[in-house]
Amino acid sequence: MKTISIKTPEGLLEADYYAGGPHWVLLFHGKVFSKADWGELPNQLHADDQRSVLCLNFSGYGASVGNQDPTHYPKNIDAALLWINQQQPETVSMLGASMGAVAMMDWAFTTESSVTFQNTVLFAPRSARPVQIPTSNLYGVFNNDEEDALAHIARLENCLPTVQIRRLSGHLHAQNNLHCEQAADTVRLLRSLLIDS
Image 1 (cartoon, rainbow, N blue to C red):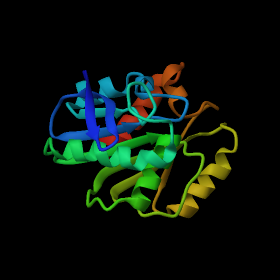
Image 2: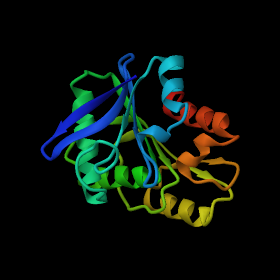
Image 3: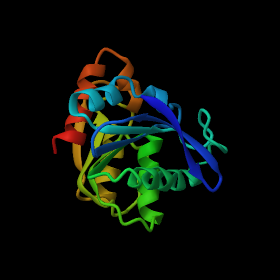
Image 4: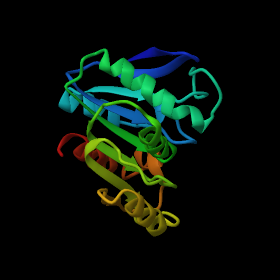
C-alpha cells in the first residue's frame, strides 16, 4: 500500500492505493471515519483477490484539501474515478459507508460520467434519494439492531427498488463493525458482495 495524491481543480485528495490487477474496488468512508478506518477489508480485497483498491479521504479529511462539506464529495468521487480510469481498469466496484454511501447516491444524481460499476454496496446510509446508480448489482448492508434500522432499510428500498438488503448482527454503525469482535464476519460479507456477485 502507498498513499497517493489525486489532483482536482480545488487541490489534492489523499488516498491509500493497493496496487493489484485490473479489477478495482473504491472505498468511501463515513462522516466520523476516514480512509484509515476500513480495518482489514482493503488488505483482504488486495491479498486474497489481487484487486486494486483505492481508499479515498474526502475533502477536509486527513491531508485532503478543503472543508468537510458534503456538497464537494460527488466531485471527489468523480476525481477518484477519473484517476482509476487512467489505470485502464476492467471492472470497478464501490463501497460507501454511511455518509460515503449518501455521497455515492448524490454522485449518481449529479454526475455526467458514463461508468458502470460491477458491484455497489451502500453500507448503512442514514438517508436516501431516488436515483439510478449505474451498477450491475446493488446492495444495502445494515445491522439488525442499529437504531431505526427498519426505517432506513424501508427508505432505501423505496428510493432504490433494485437494492438487495443484507444484514449484520448487532447494533453498531457502518465502519465501527470493522473494529469489533465481528470484524471478520463483516469483512467476509462485504468482500463477498464486492467480489463474488
